[in-house]
Image (tube, rainbow, N blue to C red; front, side):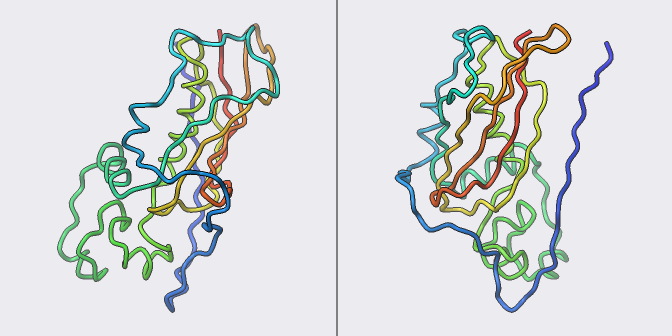
Length: 207
């Protein structure tokens, strides 16, 4: 069987301007989003499972159930870093060179380092973690009857510890291609200010 799947990642990196400046983007709470622990939400997450809507049951333009991710915590950062990225230790010379006691997660664990050397307002996530969230809302909705075929994703803004995140989605397109029944979902993550920090077009195949 020939596997035609592929992953292409494009990342933009910017020079640290120094002088104590950090990235500015909208984090001021402007929505009715409730701050809550993500721990409980993990167990309360609803999946379609065997109750997949199926291609025939999909309606273009309809919203899919939102995915509440709660308020981002150091625990969430730690679990993703060590559960997905790896368990690497940092040698002494690197810690001393960067004037940090904890460069875990590529410098994401050390709040002062994140501010002074990475221009972030505080401890921050890995962009791929939100890519996983966008995939989650699609698989939760599609259930056992659907398979993720493609994802076209953009991570636009940081996610800082203390930000509260909600993932939304809707059916953008329903069509058939080469006798395959497909649905394109438009999904996005918003912080407490209603700012879209990551978004994706996800193609789901229903066979």
